[in-house]
Image 1 (cartoon, rainbow, N blue to C red):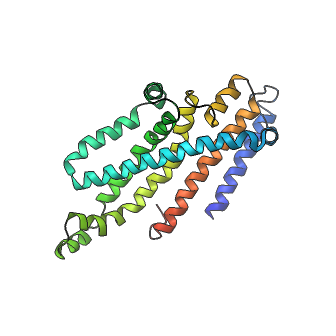
Image 2 (tube, rainbow, N blue to C red):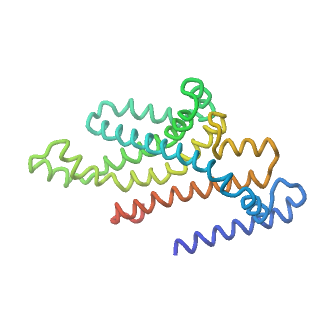
Image 3 (tube, one colour):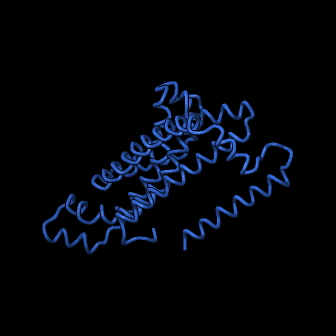
Amino acid sequence: MRGVQGLAGVAALVGLWWLLAATVFAGGGAVPTPWAVLASMGADGLAFYGPNTSATLSAAVQGFLWGNGLAIGVALLVLLVPRLEAVATQLAVISYCIPLLAIGPIVLVVFGGDATVVFLAAISVFFTTLIGALLGLRSADRVSLDLVTVYGGGRLARLRYVQIISALPSTFAGLKISAPSALLGAIIGEYLGSNDQGLGVSLMISQQQFQVPRTWGLALVSGLIAGLGYAVVALVARVVTPWSRGV
């Protein structure tokens, strides 16, 4: 049922796009029809989209792994050493509040090149996953924790047998949001001119050259990849946490 509703929503969106392109924005050239965008994508082909998509996706995946790995590690550390919670939370809030376009040039000057793209992708996912993991770790059932304690288990045993399992649903909820965020961070990093190829670089060039159908095509590909990333993490979550399908 959800799949049918999703397809219906996509079809309605494409229909609205086509209608606006043929009526309100007709003749202006700023909003091409879906067919014009698809024709442009077909003309560019894999020779254009392949390398650019691969470069952005590679940086986004690296940032996704680094950012989420650090977030989960910090959440576990906070649980084991509660005194660190205030510092970790403040750092997470700072990473969330600082605009990527503001910090990007600084990171570019310090690290340069591909490291900037990966860094911005990583910082884009850190806050969401950290909060999800912390909430999940703290939502563990008190009776189960007491049971482990009665059988002689310490803090690590409670973490291993109860709290980590309890944290999986909310952690995966954060990871699902992080997948599109990592791609966005990578594109912004490329948009700042820190790489020679990628979706962000191509978007900037196509805008400067006023290649409207190509710009829309790049945006469409970026959206599809972001949605695919969300879907992949959601599928993994359904397999790993079958008891919480509603999360």
